Image 1 (tube, rainbow, N blue to C red):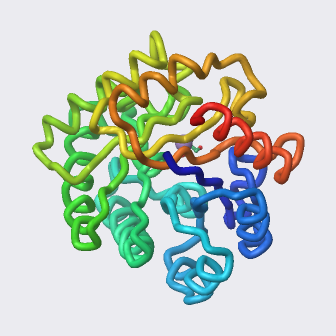
Image 2: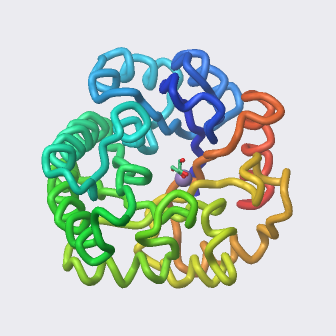
Amino acid sequence: MKSAVTISLVTEAAGGPFVFWHDLEAGMRQAAELGFDAVEIFAPAPEVLNDPVIGSLLTKYKLRLAAVGTGAGWVKHKLALTSPDAAIRAKARDFIRDIVNAGGRYGAPAIIGSMQGRWADTIDKPTALKLLGESLIELGDAASKHGVPLIYEPLNRYETNLITTMADGVSYLQSLGTSNVKLLADLFHMNIEEVNVADGLRAGGAFISHVHFVDSNRRAVGSGHTDFAPIMQALRDIGYSGYFSAECFAYPDSFEAARLTIEGFRRLTK
Ligand code: LER
Ligand code: MN
């Protein structure tokens, strides 16, 4: 089991659920000091990830790149893979493909969360799921060229109305017939949507390839009311060996959120 911590470089996302903010090197330095294995970067544009400074800093601080987020396409440009507008969908795919390729060179998969969008009056649910599926297949194929999966993240009902549980995520990915798209289990979303988080993880099973490691209130692990023992047991039972990536608020501040997370990670994985 491997630890990771999020770094957001997206100004518009300020106040969102990320641990380190705005300063890539400061985030990596603190991640390394605390003993994290990796960082997960939420970048404003693919170009930022293509900057060779990313590789230099990963080497300098002996960190891996766990994953790269794509949500800036939504936050900054209102792009979504299920937009009723074909031109916007095409731009969304281009934005994500560039991030898939940028992360891929470091062996890091890209995450599709808010870029999935939602169904609405202008686009019905079956159509939205069909459009999303076509993009997931195409982007999963792009990711396979780097030997990494594409990671699809079910979100809670306030952020999407497409897929909100692990079981539905598995059925959906199976219906697409692609083998390179996996699921992200975000314990915050699961706390809202699953009947039981541990059972949800078991339902996700081998499809789960990334975990957003966070407590019930989206603060660092140990700061809310999540019972982590059955969750860790479920992850062991399904043979999960990926990252536990801290996607939580910088509460009470970034360093403390990171410190609480790595302590929780060590306590729960020993
Ligand atoms: C992204 O990983 C996520 O969990 C979303 O809720 C971000 O808003
Ligand atoms: Mn998440």
